[in-house]
Length: 287
Image (cartoon, rainbow, N blue to C red):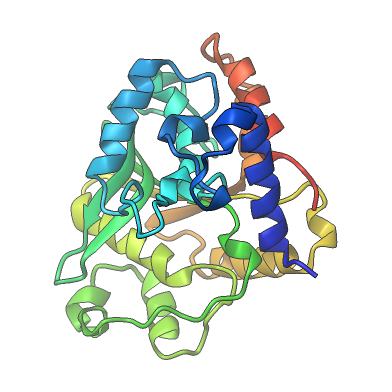
């Protein structure tokens, strides 16, 4: 029996193939990835946004547009979480002051996809799916699609993350989470804890004087309550939120369905209702 992750991936591939037509779909590398990046996007994007955002994505550290030996590019996968973030948030480019994400507003600067936040003390670079900024405010967005539907092994911590200097970048809420992960006292199987902590370290390193927020946006099927792995992810996420409640770098968690409901209720730009409906048609389904 196919896993929930495989079911979702196959369904999204079928949806994109239907959207682009038989002739274009026949040339998907491996039968799963679009040949052109634009074919993986919703049809509502104007060309100037695609060009600007693709340039941002190419400059990011995630190698999303780099071809592998089979001609596949990660951002060309219909089930790419980066592509989902691009599809959802990218349309807001140029209309940032009207954007609300998990109730957070006040964005005045240009939205960035694949935003980089270098971690001090040799910790490398955190690659945020979306970076939103305004006066005294920095919000990083981490997008998840199928990643939460499978168990995964913990990502080993490099030596740089085990130093007192690194720990001092975190407050009294986040530091114990890092400690628990390093010591293997708490290692969630569906929640990418290591990546989340690194995002907080990146935000704290680069924006220490700002109000900092990390928004974790995750996909769920319409029948989430009937899917065991989805409920396990929810439980792990609830535990993390409990551990970091009232942290100085606040964690906001919202499903994509909740985010689209939020946007549907906004008195926003004229393109917004159509955009929300296109996102729902692509990404809202049961498994």
